[in-house]
Length: 386
Image (tube, rainbow, N blue to C red; front, side):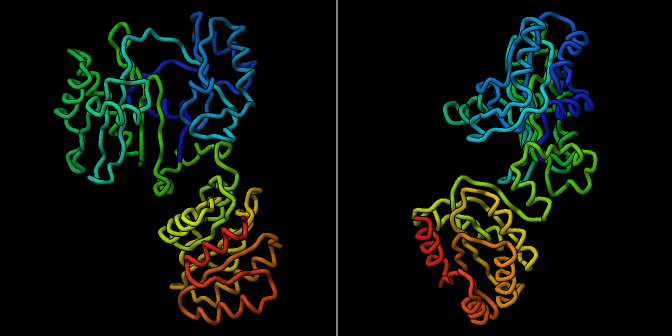
């Protein structure tokens, strides 16, 4: 689960990390109130969406007067901001963050994430902040420093100093960075985060360290014990189909193709999408209905898939291990009848009672195409949309 920038910064401040002073604005009329609180003559207006690349897309604007602030807020609020991370549809801007401006001496990069290879929390830092870290990793990997944290000892002072030296910080800045990193590490572990990224972490003209921007992702699997954080979820930022799937307990990710996929098991779902691509098709989604799919689950899955107007055919790929294939076939038949599916449906069943399941599909009188094997099913569904 992603947080908005203003929500992430509230968490940073709770852990003693300095951020710019800011006010969240939900309508243009509140913009002038923000300036009265912040003071000054220049401000930054930042669209609050769950996507990077806002600056390049016009979602971050420097304004030099109240009139310019009002115009910027009016232009952003209610608009759909399209960035390289959320193209082509973009995301709705329902809030903007108005912040004070600061005099920047340097821009640094800092993040904490879970390193899957080491199975440890890892600190990633670079003296080249304010840029896409992926570009730095590709063009100048020597500019990136990492420190892997011991799960028992946590982030150690010597590791903080290593990072500070790599970032060319000096004197009191080393102490400040150590405090900042310890605060981030505590936040990461206590809030069950999967990532926290401060980019840029700026050095002001007076030598202070300030988190100018921040992204935070919370581990979805830990939300049951992070009640306060789970309440911060902004469903307006989610794809409507993904939000519906989340409510139904399904694992769904929207893609840009025209072949709907309904599969039980994440690994099988990935293999199914790979084969569709291999044979010239384009998956419209990733959808894992789970190992114990029922008629109700399948019906919900069909409804979510068909809510995507781009879907021209559906591939159902089920391995009946926990659930028998005849029960799965019964669920598919009921779901197709209930949802009134009009696009071609290709079904591949394997597992217990597979012959009975295929017979039930064949005798259902519905336009359900039974496939023999995974490759055959992929070919058939690609042909159906050709």
